[in-house]
Image (cartoon, rainbow, N blue to C red; front, side, top):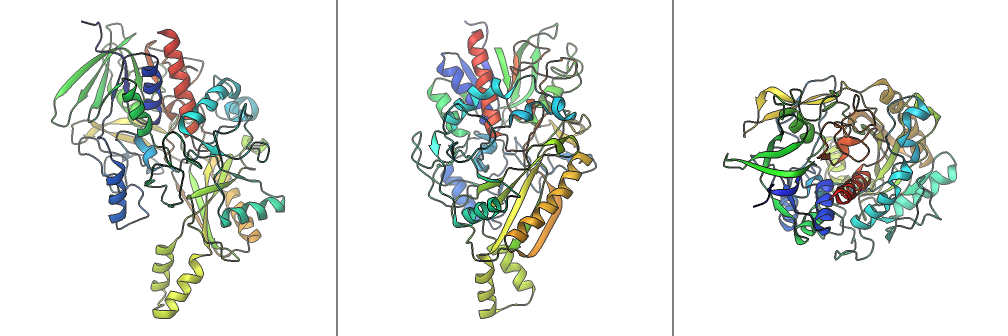
Length: 533
């Protein structure tokens, strides 16, 4: 009989949790993964999307299990209590939200790790870009990243080697976008790095341009977190789906974590002990679980001596523009997102306003165009001709606006409202700060100029902030235990055998998708645990 049920217990089977579990299992360490949601099957998701009436609802195929509610339009699971609603979406299932992500795998810029030192805002990370670079390289190999030749396109993040795969070929629209904006000298456009196969890689096919990367790649050319769930299991890890963690226990002194308690759909309670625990649910579920774990030994919740658990909620609020290009560019051919404006990601302006990345959407707005023309009274051949004329020219551009870690933006267990399992719903308090608002105003000016450079007509701005589901900062990383939750190794300051994986540890959010940085930190965390085994 062993002292513990498992050596390492990982809570959450998304991008971070599965990468950690796979690396630990391959090192011969006994690993168990608890996942609140069910297993998903790609063919069923494809069929669900095929039958969905609203093809713009990327969560439509991902119906929440009753025992594992999730962030989703129309759900009352997440309760809002702030100046601005944070309408976040995420999937609780084996593989997590990477089932339906855009798969953009950018590295942060070196300056993103030194925001306080360089610009006097936000925080500094307790590690540098150079510290993380070896794991960025490993993460690109694990996920399978296709990217441009660094000698042709400089993305601003120094590299020690090429991407595992060459970049996918740009669509005609993306090439025209890059050529015309770069020729202007006012903007710099580069090819996005993505974990979407440009050639067969890791037993998965090359992208064939289905153009529904979100919500589901039908042929698995695009990476999703279930890939490493399967790899972890093949390496010897045990994965238990439909296991909803509701508390983490500690010893009597509140120093070491000892076990995770969880519910199964029938309401039965279970307890699993472990020598080490990794929390990798997401930026909402992880801090909620930690705060729900308050006890006599840890009265303020797990790892919360700093009172920072659940605070500093960040995303990349986005605003958008649409217009008619000055010629047919045929959006909707190939992957949904391929090029970005990167010249606004960094600069002295970040002392006053957010950095941002602008990205061109490669999606056809056939439904929206048709509905608008019908509403305008068009019918018959006139309607058909106008649809055809517009659908090849209408495009949209969106952005990621950097958001600073603010303690008042937070996640808490709701004191009164509970879900179907009797567990507290997440209560979110959120607002948009002037730092973001100033950048949003500047971005509208950027959009107007880009539309002008592309001969755009019928320009329509949407200045309503939309979240991009990059849930960061709620178990924030730092060197000072008085003002942060985890250290540079993602180990909780208060509990030496408790680690946290995922974007909730980010000190700042940067201006790009967080997936590759999640993966790099996860692999670094796993290597720390292996070294201590």
